[in-house]
Length: 236
Image 1 (tube, rainbow, N blue to C red):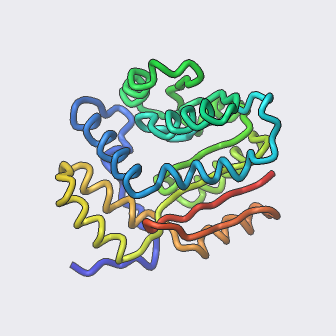
Image 2: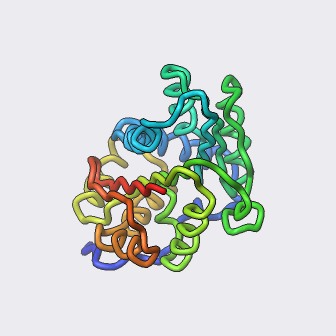
Image 3: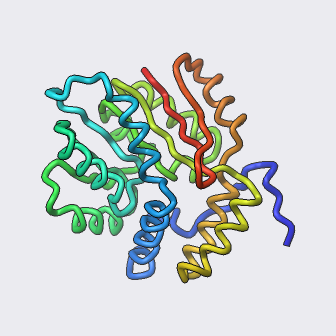
């Protein structure tokens, strides 16, 4: 089947249903986290955080919010990094699915500096949340362009230090590679379908540059990284 990657698709993902719960969702969250770890996705976000905080006094409390936190694996990686390097992190995971939040809380019970909120990021409550750094790892592509523009404004206005975005490069090669990964990892039907849709909802570099121009950003970098990711760091 011929795949067109010229424009972002508006096709929905199954996981966009915030009422979804159960074993299929739990399995999907764990498989997504595992693939992200193996392909270096979490490390990419961590590198972005390191770039933003390299000159920050370690005695400061640094509040980091992870938008669309999934099972919390990124926050646990950050917490481990903070403990090992004497950073004082206050880590907040936000997701609109209550089952996902409860599962992330269970997996993070041993981390005293991680908390979770079940919140719609288009709500007034999230609009009022303040933090030093906003993280958006494999989450931004879930939204339409106008929603992305609105979210970026919220992230920028409410963050003190900056924003780290890690998301997919919309590309036929990455689409075919993910099809192969589905076979290797034995992904269930939902994970396979959502993963392929995610790639088609991903971005071209020029699209991220256009978002930056619309926001009149002055200090940012957009870099292509393996495996078919863009690391977009916005500095306040």
